[in-house]
Amino acid sequence: MAWDVDGYVASLTSSSGHTVEAYGRDVAQFVAWADRGGCTDPSRLDHTSLRRYLSYLTTRGFSRRTIARKAAALRSFLRYLKRQGVVVTDPGRSLRAPKGSARLPRVPRSSEAVALLDAAVAQIQITDSSDEKPDAISQATALRDLAVLEVLYSTGIRVSELCGLGPTDCDLRRGALTVLGKGSKVRRIPLGAPAAEALDVWLTAGRPLFEKRDSPADAVFLNLRGRRLSTRDARRVLERFPMEDGRTLHPHALRHAYATHLLEGGADLRTVQELLGHADLATTQIYTHLTRERLRAVYEATHPRA
Image 1: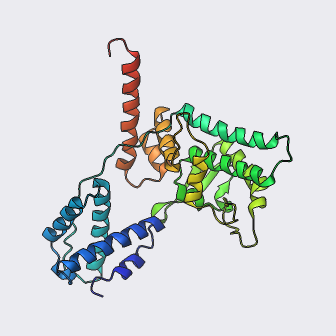
Image 2: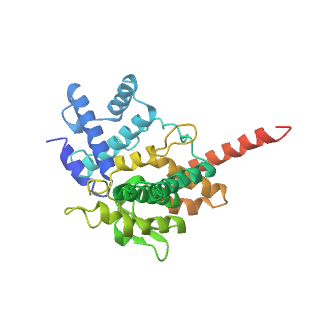
Image 3: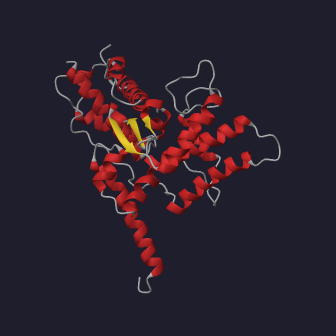
């Protein structure tokens, strides 16, 4: 009862489901470690014991990025305990952990992104031009897959935000999406014409074929069972369209591509920050590192005195 982990998890009302799950698991692991070490009272915690826990995580082989997340969960938990009066001072306020690598995974170039979307369009054309009687569900699946890919690349939204879209969030006439992002923050994002068209065709010609009696009316994207499209379902969509080298992309790679291609096209950092829904500009700045690397690679490959 002293640790009140359940109360802490219940307090994370403005966090995403993934964050709540991860932080709850991280805090529970810390409490188990503290109990094993004989510290059953939160008031006995100090900065040294917290640093010892991070060192323990390092010896267990956790990555720097994972340790950084666990430290963030621990700081959040200790702030909660202080608000509840469980501890008088917050020993986690100055707790720091090594930051994970800031390098992004390989991001598809604009030509590769276009080729991916062309492949999705071609899949629709194949089902339409088949000599056999076309399978309505296969056609609807092709329409949905194209709409998923177009929306991800056109808007740069997170895959969880895509899966959470409702019909009222889609203003196809004005070409805009309203998205509920991290921290329950709402933002309105421009939607390109190809994405708006693909989304419109899916909603009018594809989605009705996926609907079941218990299908959620407030879900734009459905899976074959008529349920709201999950993040795993979205990953499977990308797996059906591998790159030329055979690798497949994670949906988040299209978010990276969206930001990188905007910056390469001349967009300013603040605008990209707003479009991505980043609370901190420093989070967006990682994309400038990537674009500089690309510029350097082009320079070294083309300049005779590079």
